[in-house]
Length: 271
Image (cartoon, helix red, strand yellow):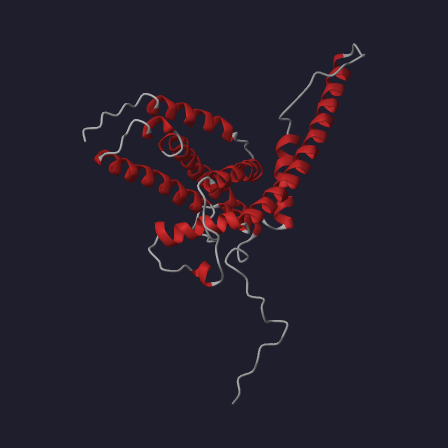
């Protein structure tokens, strides 16, 4: 007996693991993952600040002449540079509900209804009276004065809440679009290929290379990817988690810490 075929309307309708989750669960999971994504990215920033001295500055390398010690220093340089690449790639790794990365968060929230739910969360926060101003009251009646002030503050809060909700929609969609642009970029492909081929594994050829040529990674590509990640992470963290975070502040602290160590580091090469 020939097995019956599925009707055309049923084919290709299998849901992904993300799509099997309810929208509230997707939002809850995205919030939890964004906390971890930010934490992982802050570590990458620390590595990058130190590598600005170890890899890209003459502060250390200029102290080490042609010597046996230079061989050890090159190993140190290479390991510091490679771990930054590995950890940065982890931020942009493949979509997986077990992973804490940008693509997975994007997959979780890339839905018009979810974006509207997040915008509603923002509106509710600001409409609850997070701000306030003193009303100008021409009446001397304290009861009328109190009512006028309440109505004015409520109107101001509602207007601001609507503005913030609109901003949430715009910036969430922008973050999703920017993340997709990064995921489709030749730069990310080349960095990921180095990670897959030489750092995370030892391969003759990667899956990506089997599908076509991959342009070689250049020094500095990791910095471009890091910089492109910053506004995406800031926007996602702000509008998914409801809390703003200025990454530039962490960068300043990391750079200050790195300067304090490496500018005071003096090598005395033995041989």
